[in-house]
Image 1 (cartoon, rainbow, N blue to C red):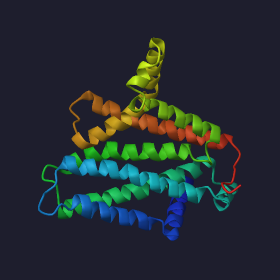
Image 2: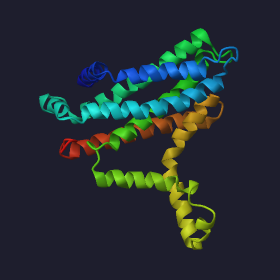
Image 3: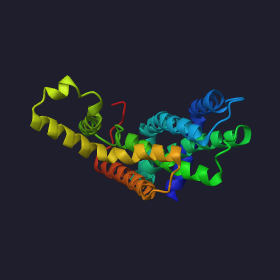
Image 4: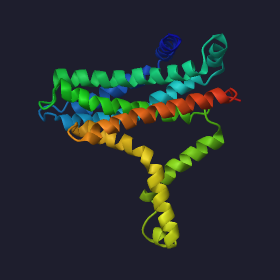
Length: 251
């Protein structure tokens, strides 16, 4: 109940600050520019492709805004009034989830009322929404974990470096890769495969949202992997937050 109360308090503070106007404007722009499609019609695949790109982008902004509200001396006063650090982080996480999911829900309702995809029913919408919402949660949890109030600078740089190394195959190749000795190339590929493993559920989740193909057994396995990774990120963020001293962002 404390988590729910603090989530409501955080949402109220977010709305009072006026930051939600950005989400409202972004929702209207995405609908009228990408989803209205007057006279062209819209397929379910197109709808989930657009929302699958839009929601992570909105998550980046919304999570950063909620972290900005939480990472203030005024916010830390609540921690001395009976709100645990786990409740504090979960309130920020659930607040972000409510805002971004609300924007996605409004887009879904507007599309269903004014430009409904003929090949999308309620079951198909639910099948596409599940991996999409899990991706929202994954990105928000990762940003909270990498925020200054949770991870120290050295740990943030380490995690970001590992993520960059996982994507290094996009910019390390050709002559640069050939310049490495054989053992160096093998080590680099093994490292990329090892570090890229945790990223697979998120990318496959986007594909699953677009195709909504649950015939393969890997679909349910991927949902379980997304959920497990989400719990791991949140757990690690809460553990790290509970182990470090509070440092005000302006100091």
